[in-house]
Image (cartoon, rainbow, N blue to C red; front, top):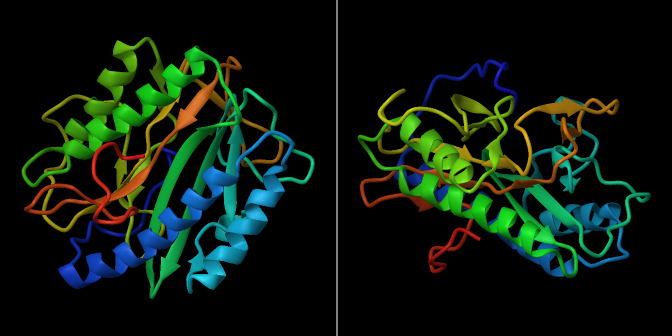
Length: 266
């Protein structure tokens, strides 16, 4: 989501029943992304991944969240190397050994949405790129840990920024995480940078799509002529990880993965 866009829905804290429905949507997202990450290999096209996602979301009884959203033409976002987010799948985009690929996918079940993303290696990648992926995922883990009643939105933002910058990377500032529920993008906007102890206080039942976007170079981005694909302005590599998370009295609940999965977010 662009930081300049205004979401039109006030912050809504979901009931336990609503969170359970969002978890059902989230499990569709998890299952599809887990299948896709196992499929990724050199020589395949990003369109093949999109076609699999579209088939599987229907089989799982859900509706794809992205296709048709503000005119987006595909079910999946596939962003390669310097592409930060919103890469459009194409039969002409062939994955190569050593690439990194961000897979971003959303689904709707009974009027509620789930949204998640993971960046995966294509074949064997360099140690430098492994470090970028690991650091970005760890920044998501640290952000999720801040999703507790009484904390502030800035605590989440600062967790991402401080961890990424400690390792020599930069966070994208023009795109942000967001509230999510009965709409794909609800209030609040969630930057990946900020000061701890600042911003709205987190309340039980809030649901947030937390999505660190971390560049190996500078934080700037530009959008390609397709009007969707955002790339790093300096051509540096970029990684993107995301989960939909609920704030609960028992701690953060990652809605886009099974309850029994523990440990790192991806």
